[in-house]
Every structure is written in C-alpha cells, then in structure tokens.
Amino acid sequence: MDLLLTYDVDTTSPAGQRRLRRVAKLCEGHGLRVQKSVFEIIADEKTLLTLLHDLDQIIDSDTDSIRLYRLPADGFDHVQTLGIAQVQPHRGDLVL
Amino acid sequence: MDLLLTYDVDTTSPAGQRRLRRVAKLCEGHGLRVQKSVFEIIADEKTLLTLLHDLDQIIDSDTDSIRLYRLPADGFDHVQTLGIAQVQPHRGDLVL
Image: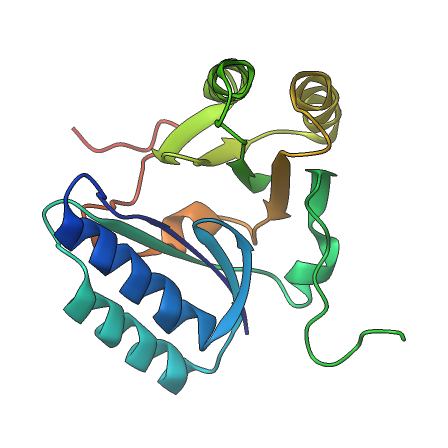
C-alpha cells in the first residue's frame, strides 16, 4: 500500500537533531524522501508495524510528531506538484 | 475531498521567510495545520484550483516545493500517529 509519512521533530537540542537524523535514516530505508520531512513509502502491514515500532523507539513522545496517511492505490502517481516538487518514480516504472 | 498539502519553502533568505509565512497563512484559510509544513484540507475541485493558483503566485518555483495528495474518503480519520500528533476533528464531528 502507498503511505505518506510526515514528521516534525523538535530540533532545538542536539538530542533532537540526532533524533531527526535517525528518523530520516530509518525512513530512507523504507521509501523516498520527497520533502525535508515527508516520505513516500510502499509497505505491507507487517513492515508498517515494524516501522512504526522502530520510530516510536526513536522519537521523544513529548515533543515529536509523526503522522502516517494511507493513500489510494497509485496515490503517488496522482500527486499534484508546484515548484521544484516532482512526481517520483516508484515500483521501477521509470521510463529511461 | 480530503487533501494533504505539504511544503518545503527555502527560508535561507528574508524573502523566503516571507513566502513561508504567506504559504502558511493561505493554507490556514483552507484547512488545519497538523505539522509545521503539513495541512489537512477539505476542498472541492474549484476551491482546489484556486488554492493551487494562489500558491503558485507566492512560491519561488526554482527553490520551493509544494505537494498535494488526495486521500481516500475520511482519510483524515484513519491517520496513524506517534508522539504528540493527534487525529484532528474536521467537519464539526468533535464530540464535546
């Protein structure tokens, strides 16, 4: 399924900056970074549960925020963009 | 329809900081801010077109990025959250 994960991590402390890096690195292993705090992720239920568990271990639940939205099928292909944003290829459907 | 709007605005200049404020203010008129750069928006096609047009007038298309995702029906109600993130009430369905 197509998922959109967005996060706000409080980076006013060095510990927060470390958490941000760890969250970003974890998400990079699961999807494509399309903005500073936005990842497009394709995952099944099991992988999703693991991801949420791992994120929960990293963040400070008193200051940080993670939101995960389920998109319709092929939701990534129907994103509307402005500026430098682009539709990102998933599932190896890039035409070379 | 339920929409998720995310943005990255380059704030390394005072002009960029102004653009960020203008983008946020415009989006606040259309939906709920759920993270620093993420808005949940309910809009019809006409309002959406107007919003995209207005955003396009504000941003610097060489540096800024706006992405707009269409969620399934009641997509906001099925967001999964960690930390301080909460499901936000839309459509006046808040139980008091």
